[in-house]
Amino acid sequence: MSKLEIHQYSYMSDNYGVLLHAPSSGETACIDCGDAQASLAALQNTGWSLTEIWVTHHHADHTAGVMELKRETGATVIGPAPLSQNIDGLDETLNDGDTFVFAGLEVHTIHTPGHTKDMINFYLPDEKLLFTGDTLFTMGCGRLFECDANTMHESLAKLTALPPDTLVYSSHEYTLANVKFALSVDPQNAALLTRASHVEALRADGKPTVPSTLQEELDTNPFLRTTDKNIRELLDMRTADNADVFAEIRLRKDNF
Image (cartoon, rainbow, N blue to C red):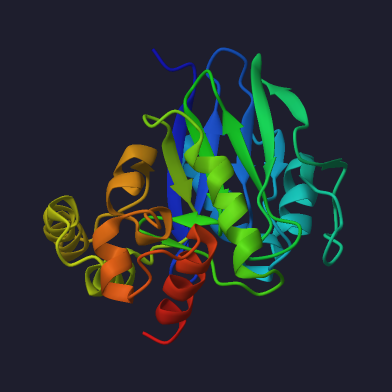
């Protein structure tokens, strides 16, 4: 049985924030904070008291509310070492492979440059939880703003090495657009066709498509399927390196 409770909430047009709460100790972490008022409202709704803020990367839709939330709650702010832009309010900085303890549980830092140079993911192996920021989305991945395609491909490989039943919490509701693109490069994938119908039904009911399992992403996310022969044939890249196939898929998504 999980030792943690999770409350996911939306803010801005398509962002998700997450509160992670340990009933046994009362500790609560907020993963990213682009809107302090949205995070404070989520805390009020749950009745939880914030103790930590975990930051995945420096983009404003993940950090704009950090200082206000810190002032209002006194929470400790943990985030990536400054490889891109500085993040105001950080009390502790993390690098790849660093670990810390939250509510008696080990949290692993996975550095996944690609979308930004400083992107980190938070992985709780005992709970099989992964918070990917803007690295891995439901059936998608982040745009390449500060690194090249090979770097992002290597970063995603770190995540796909985790147990397939890991629950993936990403930071945006991009799935309808992602599934439409996925079908354009992987139209013969039966698992993708089934999942597309499920996603459309969820969104029609106003329900989130996040989280997903890593296995679902391995089965349906084209950015994780660079070895698939059908995708390679469609791209006319039958013998290309996996990183080159990934780069072509990312380019096509950018222009989709």
